[in-house]
Image (cartoon, rainbow, N blue to C red; front, side, top):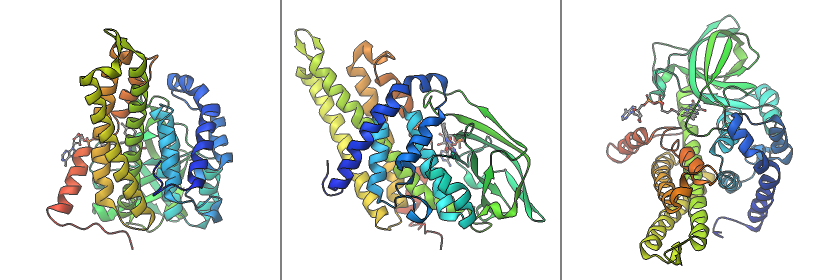
Length: 388
Ligand SMILES: Cc1cc2nc3c(=O)[nH]c(=O)nc-3n(C[C@H](O)[C@H](O)[C@H](O)COP(=O)(O)OP(=O)(O)OC[C@H]3O[C@@H](n4cnc5c(N)ncnc54)[C@H](O)[C@@H]3O)c2cc1C
């Protein structure tokens, strides 16, 4: 473990979290993967253990810890090999809850953030729409102010925790004439009349529920606006730096899991009278895989440190997501090959890992969109600034 970033406290947190996952989560994973539902008791247990609050303020019930605890949380979730379970947990804790923390007022924090930290309420973040996910500012869902309410109409899709969550953090247009400046963020309670969710079937992330959500004249109190009206787009972009880094860390962690698994497998499996790890071609393949993972991990740690120190690392987080997710896919593809026919079997971990990994270059900003952003920053010298 890299001691430049991890203290004794971090290391003991990792050990206890690993133990917790093995005891409380791993025995249920295959069931949740099959049923596409994560039972409620585990959310409560995560809450009781304080895991949802590791980077949330102490005054709201969190632990206020540095981002390397988040790194450990994410890495260890990847290493139990259910991208879907991991996604449900981090989408709640880092997509929905980040908006509650940063833009929610005291009332919203009390009603939603603290219960989210405790594992009593589950959240989701609704940005992508059926008409387009990459063009965030082109969204059509709208919120019209009427007296002391907003009325929301429209639809969202591919929303993680979109079926079973208790509340929704929703991006909607408050001014349809404007693109970037016409968007706002709202907290919407699941029980509000007019909301319906349809569960989607998908290639991987099978333990997590992914939904299309319709909003049909959903009336919410005007005080459910989070932050300022018209600032939704910059809020989303600001948090994308953390979200992208999270997806990059997930990528290096699952690739590392694949390399570790393959090393063990190759030391045991024999062909032509010797173990696989004695064939030069395969040794070189593993050397290449391990090197790529190491490069990603070290880069991601250094960007985490800068983000934790308060730097606005939007370019670096975009770079790290773009490359780490690509490398994870390559490494996992090669790892599956090294298992031969067993790689293709559900009984072995690589089949699920390959499916789950494929979402990396798509979700939270596709690789193509990230290249656009990076190109604008390095060629056109465009600067993205945090919201003041
Ligand atoms: C399992 C899963 C979970 C998800 N969870 C969430 C969630 O919790 N909340 C949420 O809001 N969203 C979520 N998403 C949505 C995800 O962020 C979007 O799928 C993603 O942003 C891409 O949007 P899209 O699918 O509409 O693709 P499109 O925008 O239709 O893009 C289609 C293709 O065209 C490319 N493309 C588009 N524009 C350009 C361009 N200008 N230049 C070059 N190429 C371009 C894209 O890269 C892509 O390859 C999830 C998606 C999945 C699959």
